[in-house]
Each structure stands twice: as structure tokens, then as C-alpha cells.
Image (tube, rainbow over all chains, first blue to last red; front, side, top):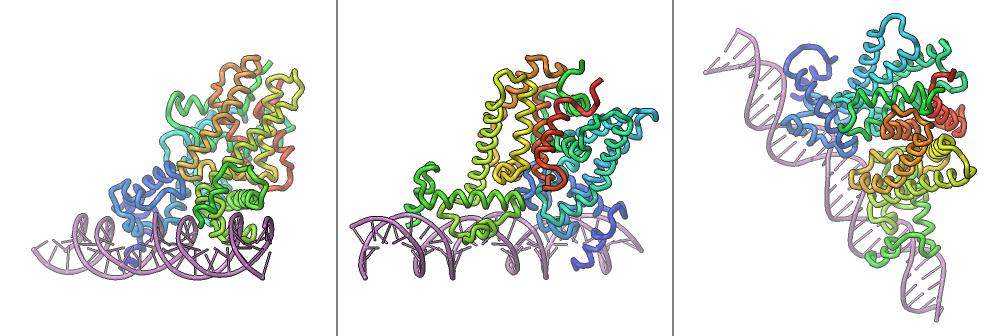
Length: 212
Length: 212
DNA sequence: TTGATTTTCTAATCTAATTTAGAATAGACT
DNA sequence: AGTCTATTCTAAATTAGATTAGAAAATCAA
């Protein structure tokens, strides 16, 4: 009786701490790993299931479809990244300046994408690869996160910490690009995520040219 | 006798100005348009063919497979972008400084991605979506373009125009991210590609913070 | 242990697209 | 006109993978 048996999984997550919920979690992690590695089209349900010793068909007990799975991954990724940046900002001393806040957000976001957080990284990578309906939903969820960044930039400008000649939307997208593109090119190696994050933040805020 | 008839198309392009070559060209343009709009997995050969009033099967007279088509698109896109930036640099006055050269490259690259150049834009968008073998080939072709950028940055650093504390590889990737991510988010609207290009270049070189 | 329930597996089926084979069409040349 | 060649079309074959139904296995409660 799949129709009924499947019901619990469709119910709002984070319900009972039963086995189903744990499996659901590990499927999400596995899916993120495979999606991150292979991209949307090349990632097969068979691979994702195999990653945790399951068969493709079994995934359907927990998720209604491949699309539902990728959507769930991206929803979690969006939420976690947003939350991580919020936490980092909250941890700042009360009197932290606008640029310090911006710097913190840049570094934290980048570390989410670069470090072992497959879900955050996969989410970034998938945004423009996922089918349109999924993308729309995720982008809608990301609006709040975008608003956070807009606030940071506007705050900095109000404090006179940003040159007045730059368009803030363009600036925001350029920053996001510098951060998110790394989900594609980055491979662990010479530099740590922290070092990279620091350099990118320094470049965004201070520019390439040395200050006189 | 498809095997023989197909031969001319497989021969090095830019041969005879016959009809085949012209059709091949328009297929490339159409493919770029559809790939840019729908992404790699959602773009169907049927759509691409329909774009120029053809049937999917007919594409096989000109390209050996879907993969060969996307690869051809990306190869042209890579070459055109590289060439456009080279031209822009060549047009600079002989004594142009390292930062001016960098600024020019940034603006020209960005305009290629934002403006009506579907092939350049599609190429950027497809790099991380295309199947691994295609991606490898294209990335290999892009090495020369990457070297151009490395040269620009090293030149700027040697001239003392870049802060010595930044890692140049990280810097280069961050710049590429700021530029290339725009292939995904940009929609024609409020600002022209030129205005956007100018702001991004200003931000990269001068930073967000005002100069004292 | 037994029975009920949840979870996973097996073994098709379905689907949607690429790909192919051969027929049709259109031009060019004689 | 008639032939040859290049190009496109039609219609079917192939494929790869998602999806589904029902059988098995595992888990849990009594």
C-alpha cells in the first residue's frame, strides 16, 4: 500500500525521529554529494541510492520524484546557508561597522560553499541547472536571503562605507557571482577555504589596487 | 548514403561557402539561443531544429550527435570571447597601464556575456552543465584564455598596481565568477550591458569602500 | 512467536528523448 | 528532360533512466 505508506514521508519533515526521518536525511546528503559531483543531468537516482547502499526504487518511499528530491536538497541548502550567515552576523560585536558585517557575510557564505557542506554547495551549483519549476520555487525561497544582502549593502552605503557611484543591484550580483562561481571551480588543494574567503572578501571590499 | 554525404560537414569547417556551411552556422546560432534559454538538459534537439524550421533528424546531417553540437557551440563561444578580449586590448593605446588593460578585459568579457552574443553567453552557462567529456575539451581550449588573464594580473602585480597580499589564482577565479555568473541572472532591463560592465570593473579594481 | 507496520527490493513498465534508415525533395549540371 | 548529389523529412528503432506494483524483508509491539 504505497499510497498510504508513503504518507508519513510527505508530512511536514522533522516530525518523529523514527528511522524514516534518518534515512530521508541520509538520502538528502547522498543526493547532494552526487549532484554536486555530477551536476543535475548526469546524476542518476541509481547513483544516489547506491551511495547509501540502496536501490533506486526505494527512494520513492521517501520522495515522490526525482524533482521532489532535488527540490528538497535545494530547500535545505538555501535554509542552511541563510542561517549560517545570520549566525555569523549575530556573533559579531554589537558595534561592528557596516563593512565588517559585509566582510563577515562574504566569508561565511563562501566557506559554506567551499567547505564540506555538500548541500550548500550542491544548491548553488544546481540553481540554474534544475528544471524551471524547481528553480522558481528555490529562487522564491532565496528572496529572503537576497534581502539580507541588500540590507547589508544599503546599510554600508548609508554609513558612507560604499562608493556612491556603484549600482547596488549590480554590486550584489557581482559579489554573489564571485562567491557562487567557486562552487564550480574549487577543488580542495593549496589553499584552505578560509584563506580563499579572506582574499575574496578583501578584494570585494578593498579592490585590487593598493590603497594610497 | 549518409556515411559519405555527412563527410563534408565533418571536414574542417569554414571550407566552401556552400549552403551546408551556412546551415551549420544557423544551427549553431539556434542551438546557442535554446541552450542559453533552457540550459543543457532541458534543451531538446526538437526545439533547436524547430527554431530554424527544421526537424530534429535533419540536424544529424550537420552534427554527429547532440554532444557534438553542444561542443561545437562552446568551441565557437570560447574562441569568440577570447578574440574579442584580445581585440579590445589591442585597441588600447600603446602606453596603457596594467590596470587599464585589466579594466578593458573585464568590460569586454562582460559585454560578450551580457549582450546579444548568444554563443558566448551559452558557452559560459553550459560549461558546468555539459557532460564531462565535453567540459574537459572546452576547459582545455579555455586554458589559453585563462593564461591571458593570468598574464594581465601578473603584469598588474609586477607594476605594483595590485595589492601584494592577494593570491592571484583566487583573484582570477573571483573575477571570472563576478563576470560569468551574470550569464545566469542577467535579463535586459534597467541597465545596459555597458553600465553593468563599468560598475563591475570599478568594483573589482577599486573595491566597494571609497578611497580616502 | 505472532501479527502488523514500515521499509526496501525486484522486476517490470513507461516515457521522452536521441538516434537511424531509407524515402522524398530540391538544385545544379549536362 | 534526365541524372546526380546534397539536403531534409518521415517514421521507426533504440536507449537510458524514471517510475510503479507487488513481493520480500526487516522492525516493532504484544
